[in-house]
Image 1: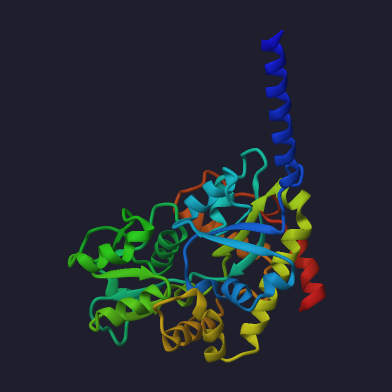
Image 2 (image 1 turned 90 degrees about the vertical axis):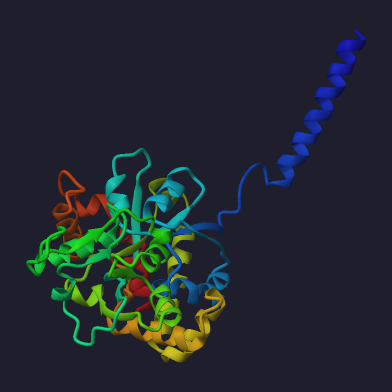
Length: 341
C-alpha cells in the first residue's frame, strides 16, 4: 500500500507540475504574432523587409519577427517544411519543386521583380557586354537556384553557348551559396562572379581591381518573381490575419522607399548591415532602385510566373509547367492593394 501511496503522490506532483507548465505557456498555445522568418540570404536586395523591421512597422502591427539567414532557397524551404519557419523569403521555384507535399507551400507575396545579382569582374571592363564572358568562367550559383538558372537563360537568349570552349561561357554551379565570394576571390582561374549587394560592393572595396560590370536584372528585360514570401497552406488558412499584418508592414516599407531619398533609406538599413558604410548602402539602394527591383503591390502576376516557368523549363529543373493558381495565392496582396496603394 505504501508503494501505491508513494506512486500516487508522485503522480499528483507530476500532474501539478504539468498543469503549471500548461498554464505558463497558455495551455500549449504559442503566440502567433511572433513570426519565425527565414530569409534565403541577407542582402540589400530585400531592403523593404529590413526597413519594416528597423522602422518598427512590424511592431506597429503587433508583430515580433525573428529573422534567420538560410543561405540558399533550398535551406529556407526545408525550414518551412520542418516547421522551424512560419514564413520564408526565398525563390518561388522552391514552391514549385515542393507543390506536391502535404500542406504545400504557397507564395502569398512577391518582394522582388528581377534578378538582384551583379556580375563582378576581377579586372575593369568599361564597356562590358555578355560577349566579354566568352572563353571565361563565372560562378553563377548552385544548380536549381535562380541566380545560376537566370544567368543560363540570359546567355541562351543572347545565343551564347555554355561550355568550356573558346567561344563558350564556363558557368560554375558547384560552389555553396555562402562561399561564392570567397571561393571566387581565392581562385585566379575564375574570372567573374554573380554577387548580390552588399557583397558585390564590399568585394570591390577590398580588392580595388575588382569591378561591378553588369546587372543581371537589367540584362533580363522581362519581369520575373525572383524572391517571394511563402507559407504553408495551413498557416495562411489558420493565421491569415497574421500574414496580412506582416504584408502590410512590408508594403508600408516599400512606400517609404519610394517616397524617400537613397540616403534616407540607407539610414533605415544601417542597423541591418553592420560593417557597411552609409555611403555604400546608399549606392546599393540606388542600384536596386534603378532596376526597379521591388514590387510596389507584391502581387505575383500570371505573366511574371510564365517567365519563371520559361527559365525552369530551359534549365530542365521541371518535367512540366506548373499552374500559377496552384503555386500563388494573391488574396492578401489584392486586399492590401485596395487598402494601401
